Image (cartoon, rainbow, N blue to C red; front, side, top):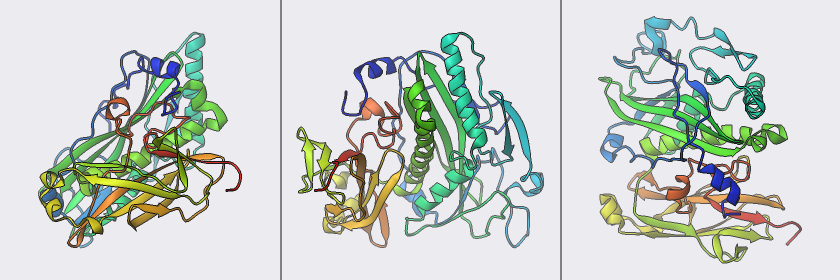
Length: 423
């Protein structure tokens, strides 16, 4: 096994899996749930640079909307004018509560319009023993969709995640609105966010699922797009692992995909700054490194003390404000995850260690990370989350190796096994 939990055979076969291009239904805003079988090499893309500091400083009143940005024209509607919100006279809000019934994979699913709770189509006719197993896999995911009361990969859920992230930026005054709500007259920019597709690619019995979303920050005064970005989240596993234990890996994927995409959008647009730095776990009295690997530790304590080390490498060359940075004022956000979700979060921690303030469960392996928070005057600038430096292998958290072992988002965080029994 590798340090990421990827077996040699699995990793070898993974090279035959390609991340399928996201398909969008022609002439429609409906994102596509694409299904494909083809070969090729697994590829990942490095995240683009965040929006410039100058553009960030030009905007403070921001509205987050759960939809794609309009192709042209201005967003109309204000409380003073009592118009019908984002869709104005086009939709009049009259069809928002309606739905369409679509038959996919033998299951009839009803979608609300226009905030689609799931991409709208599964593609692919299959035959033969292996292909029947793939068909069963597809149908299991479809059945789960039909029975889901609240899909985590919806546009409105994504917009909510983005809002809760950017509200950490002190100078911003964000709002998240439904599409029927009029745009406040003091709005300076609108951040459009939407899920644009989910693709399933299968090679032999290895299935790769890729979710894609799009974000556009548009200036309200003239309709100019200030920043655009596409975000992808990919994870891979066997057909069996995706569907066992009541689709546990699939459910975890859905939650992590939105979690990653939401915070990646907010980071690129308003939060993240890029400083040359080194950030890694450090020695802790509670944690014993596994074979001297500081990224893998074990502990007897259910409330372990996490420790890390930050070194700024020629930070002044990366940003003008970094030249006057008081290192003693740097704070840290801390996160701990189990295999399914975040279980612990601490903000603005002073110093380079933190004792977890809730009991973690024995006999479980957790993943943890920190990010530096730089106070500059009355503003806060956020660094990157601590990850094992593995760009060439797994694309910094957006392309996973084995979903049932560790979700793509947390696979390159530091791992911590809480041993069984009391300390």
